[in-house]
Image (cartoon, rainbow, N blue to C red; front, side, top):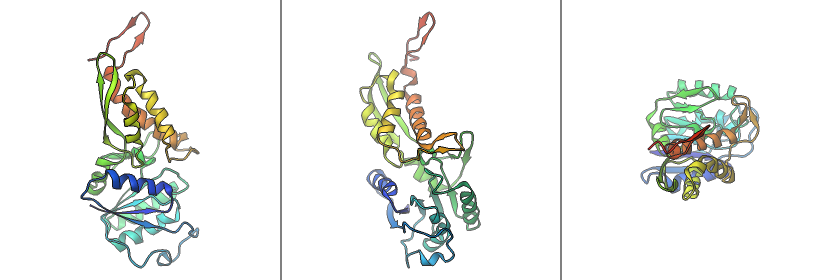
Length: 254
């Protein structure tokens, strides 16, 4: 798969570095450093685009400027892209109204688009858009990317006698690399403490999602991202946790 990543800050560069380090060897990843300053309305896209960009199948929009959304249809046409992932880790970069317009523009071009909010809500079938809304998609290019990067997914091994984590394998890494960081630090942690510890580790990475309150979630996207991480760990350690109720204490479910 040929990928073009659009970046203009450390936010996007960290994503690119992680993809290059841990993505499949057969992927080709090129980067365009886009302008950091763009007008409110772009009347002539050609004034802000390079004369040429490398051909690509998938565009990753990581640049922190909402004007880049207006350029994406022109970029897709220029390079022959068939799919776009436009991350929303900060709605100021891609407001919901502009996101709806972008979906319409690219749909008319037969270019698939997903706008995961936050980026780590993307998996191989759907992505998050609000507290109650999950959006399904069906595109092979985006699905191939989301097989390796997006919603955190682990395979965690626990020693039954001590109930301590002995290994934490990353099945799917967050694009920023946080999942691998958490996995490395979880080894030795008790199953009972793993969920809370993963949330603390996520906070310390740190997450690149915004700390402003998002109206679609009623929470910050950083906290939403942290909860996604916690849920992924909780699912893995659930069979090994001890539960206390009035008058009794359970053994593990295994």
